[in-house]
Image 1 (cartoon, helix red, strand yellow):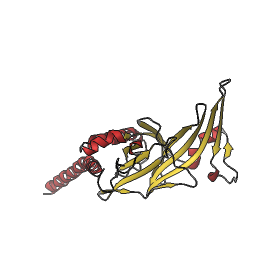
Image 2 (image 1 turned 135 degrees about the vertical axis):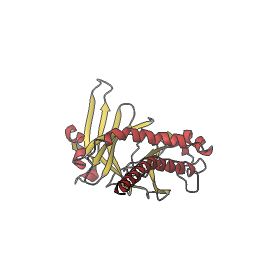
Image 3 (image 1 turned 90 degrees about the vertical axis):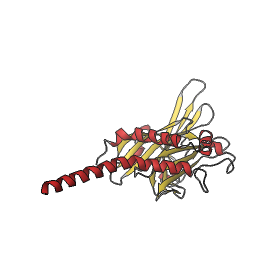
Image 4 (image 1 turned 30 degrees about the vertical axis):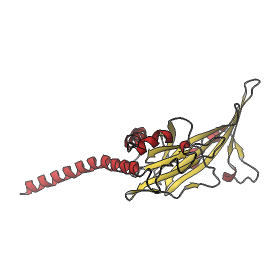
Length: 265
């Protein structure tokens, strides 16, 4: 009798483990299905042509920035000379997609343009084990003509709302006469006690700003695959958006899978 009891317990344990393993992908599939269905619903996440004249400037990506199992849909509007960049985030919560109440710009940070014109966004990721958060680092580049540019280093993480923090920026200038390059590095004014503009710093400190702001973090990498609005809209209207959304999330998952294995448990 005791042997049968033990066998029953072992079989039940094996069944439960199998159920957990098989349930995880199904949960993601269900979230993606709901995401596809609610794109153009009332208060849906997709910016439709009837809602904005510049709807085609938006890009979309599926992620799980805080790795809590609840997917997010990121919405990013590309900035340009005739427009202003925007960034939104909606997360799956309690069976529906909910907005995070906007973006929190930490301190005096500016709204970043996280789109570089490339299909894939490459991010450096810092994992803060103490606070159990993932911080995504990227550099925004804004050209001022052919020979001048400003590179701004940003950190983004999800904590109730999407937090955006400007770490520092650098200016780049190329001389058209002798080909010489001038590059200077700065802390933004809001990060210093200065009252007259940003504080100039050295290149070495600039390279360490992320570690200075987020010490004792494990460094990883991640990719975010953006989908252009004009490519996604026909799929949404025909009810065939699931595969494209799934592909976007697969790129994010695969890019972080190996790195996550190295994290402390």
